[in-house]
Each structure stands twice: as structure tokens, then as C-alpha cells.
Length: 269
Image (cartoon, rainbow, N blue to C red; front, side, top):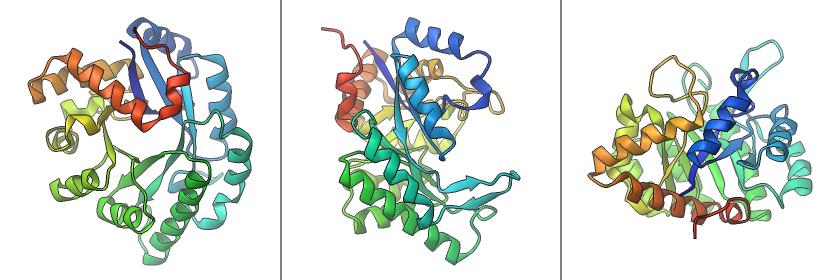
């Protein structure tokens, strides 16, 4: 059965030299990958990858933290999203989600209330676009689980993906109550927040992600989509279920979450 990696960054420079080998492993393991954009520089790259590799689908969006040319970083603001509407107008038919977008309230990246409000407004603009083009959201939330859920409720958003969610049990349950999905990465073998998601979220709301090249099983080492097989093994141990059952459930969940995938992957009869 095909296994779906719901959140990865295959345009990262880490994959420049060995992307062919990485995608060959995906072919061998029957893994389909959603690679998400983070900025305008990413957009042409994700489009090119999706054209070249049949096992890559894509999302378009703007990460809440943007890098400047001199390598400093700044929080996203609403005016940054104007160009995204033009890209989506042209490519929404083949885009499977809007993302990566969300909130990042890390103190060293977004220390002031004005900057956090700016991020909120930028996310609201992206939510408008997601609704306009009927695209599910692929969401980032670092140190911002509760504020993100509050905003999603205010904007009447349901059925989004909460990637690498680091909130507590109460926030996770609120996300489930609102109708969202949660993804689990290979870092589950070392990350208590991922273990908490796995043990709190019902199986019918869990999907898999690699977040490649981040969130690998070994801290500091580059990650790749084939490592979601490690996620499956650990989920089997944590949930006390066969990995085949978890693979089937997470694939079915991903197809409910991202319905356009049904036109892009080949399912076993």
C-alpha cells in the first residue's frame, strides 16, 4: 500500500546532490511525498519537482518566519501574501494544499506583540486564499499551539493539518475537537511532543510526515521521506497495532485531508 508523507521540504539544498537516490527509495518503499513551499523562492522549485517526479505533490504557502537576503529572519506580515494570490490563481488546480503557513512565536524570532499580530494577519490572508481555492491548510505552529487553534476557530477553519504540533494534551484535544489532523514524524523516537501527539490523537486523525530534511530519528542528521517507515514502526509499538493497519489508516486519513491526492497516486485494488 502507498504510504503518504504529508509534509516535507524536498527543495532544500540538502537534497541537491542525492535527490535521485532519495526518490528511488520512495519508489522502492511506495511512498508519495507532499513537498511544501515556505517562500516565493521555493514556488518555482516545488512546481519543477512535481513535474519531474510522479511521487511528489506540492503545496504553496508562506512560512511565518521569512529569511532575508542577508540571512537574518523576520516574521511574516499580511502584505507579504499579495503575490501568493497570483501564484494560486495560476496553479491551484494542481496544488494539493496551502502551506506551509501558520504561526511561530519563538521568542528569539518573534519577540514582540506587534510582530505576533502581524503573523496572525498574514495567516488570516492565507486562510482567505485557502477558502477561495478550496485548499486544506498545512500548518506550522511553534510555541503557538493555543494561539493557532484560537485563530482557526475564529476563522471557522476545520480539517487542517497541524504539523509537528508541540502543544500539550489540552491543546491537542481541542485540535481534534475542531476537526483537524495531526502528523507524526520520525523524531517520535526521541521527541516527547511527537509521542504525546501519537498517544492523544485518535487513529482516524493521524497522518505521517517526515518534515525532511528536519525531524529525523537522529538529532542533527539529515532526514528523508523513507524514514517515515521508522515512524510506522514506533507508532505500532506505542499504539499496540500492526504497522500494516496504521499504514492503511494514515493513508486513508491523508486522502480525506488532501482529496486531490486521489488523482495523483496509484492505490492498490
